[in-house]
Length: 333
Ligand SMILES: [Mn+2]
Image (cartoon, rainbow, N blue to C red; front, side, top):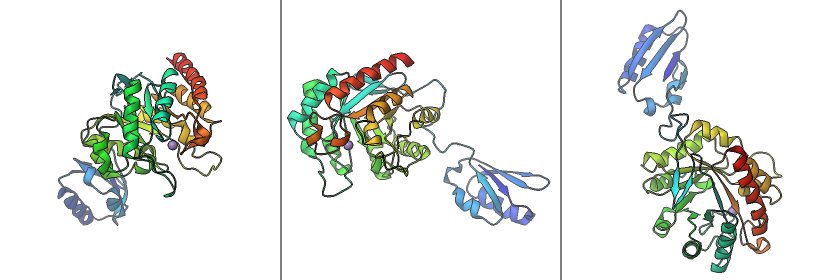
């Protein structure tokens, strides 16, 4: 960490600041230039409050030199994390198509959708049991019953399951779930992140609707700092001033996250656009941009879906899309 002091500071003021910094177990290297004095702070500066230091009367500016992200950040250019989900791999050159309904509604529904998307090449089944809905009066999901039905679909098809955990008290129900999703609204629920960090199973972490990439990576760091290194990042659109789409899909997040991190990146064009007419193009574009996976909502009867029907593809539409996605994969390999 580097602190540049303001012009005209007295040697006594510098000495007081250096003493205070040293009292926090840091080494301080003082460089006095003709006009400015620069302090180089050496040691564990992660506990230093940058804003507090910056607010001091004699301090002009402060810059962090070391990355606050220690585990999620990219270390070697060519080494990417590969996440194992059952016998499926994701990341580091492995690509997976994830599909399923927004929410689990019945045994017939989830098994029918699972069989259909599997036939089209999807390898992981998604489906919500616990639903974070904007309105408390909207369908809230089947809860524990939904988890039970997802496991029935897993039994019927062999597909690993990804589903969202909203409350840590429900964790015992997730024992046989393959991937736990932390939704956009919970991306900065730090207690929840720490709890899933203590598990030893993959976590799909969705980007918050108003979160920066740095904040997304800090949230991944919360999970990893507890020992769980199996984190999958998910871009699902962010809130902008454009109302035509449900959110704005930030496709540049895919190569940007690959630059910043070794973790795999999945794109969810369904929640990003909210419109069936836009999902296929964005799913193809995400694949072309190098996403390690694409996650799409598919429903056997979108018109009667209890949740997100307007953004659910039919199995036939998904089949057409998956063909395009696999062709793009071949083209970019
Ligand atoms: Mn949904």
